[in-house]
Length: 165
Image (cartoon, rainbow, N blue to C red; front, side):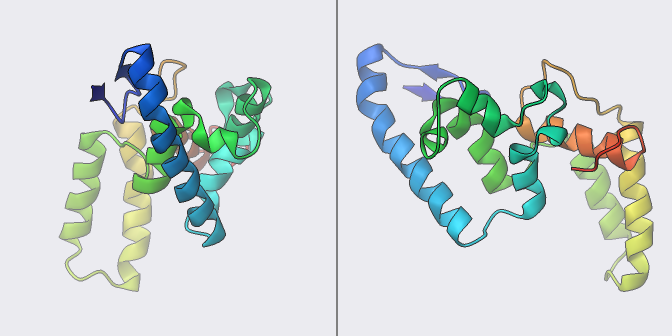
């Protein structure tokens, strides 16, 4: 059996899928219940999932409303394979950022030495430059929920959208 967390690809026979999916779905549900009960997901990433204004490609619906439109309601959303392989990794690990962006941000932080409150403005300005310099954009073909979310919030920071999600 091959499972790719980032692409959501499963290479299973139907019998393997039926017998192996239930424990995965149950674990996803238990983890999300725990994270939500402990407020373990920051408000902004959760809003990216629940607020229609934050989902540019949603045609007026949020990500969770799209699940509901397609028949998954309540806790079933957290058991859905699409949620497990596309959204759950974002809530656990954060966005799947391009490596050049990660390296640029690490270099900028390292250049500050011991970070003090005086460095925050420098880092804020740098963080606004990186996505534009690296041409981060949101496309319908973007494979990562987190990558699209970063592109959306980056455009908002740069004044290219009206809602900061």
